[in-house]
Length: 290
Image (tube, rainbow, N blue to C red; front, side, top):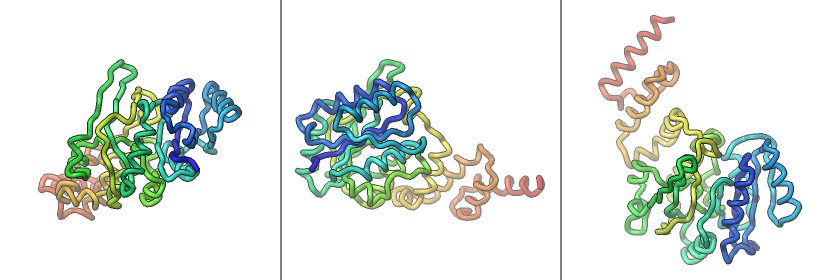
């Protein structure tokens, strides 16, 4: 039985895959690790050749997606096939600091009550050659994650390790956000289910951020969808007036008739006077324009 499973998600990373795998070797636990490599239908010849060699000459399990379905699908395939209860997601263009797997496994065994682990991490801007340490120390109070502070200043690492049961309870990664902010959506579901986290006050991940890559896409509209989807959870920490005005003001510049009218109809009471006037004006223009 493997002590820990690593879900390595691949899409055209080429030789960068070696850096990710090399970082796994730097753990005493390596021989007791299950390594699942999930390929999201890569079309790069170098990547495809490397995957063929890894499948032929290593014990790693290669899982191929039938189509390019995005990171949500890849993560879900990895978690679904993981044999260990402890799962560590890793994107193929990123790495883990030395001994991270040893530390994560020990933390899970020392704290069986915890459902996920989060810690500090490095953001390496590969195009600019800079590196920044992101600390979550201010988001951890009295042995609990400060959710209100996290929602105001989101720093939680998307690839934070968790139990397979945590992934199941959260309903996995949503394909709605598969090519953008699937991590934020997933962790909001984890937090909404009142699952327990444990903080490690040390770097547990190296996020190599580039202008192109697995998660380079960031869509402002998707952030609005996310806020709308999780409005009830956000309302535990912010007023509904604040939430629905923020959503309305986010959609307003796009003049999306369906979204604005539907939002106004459902949450008119919570809108500010200015946004009510905007809605009325927009409604009249929509009627006249017909």
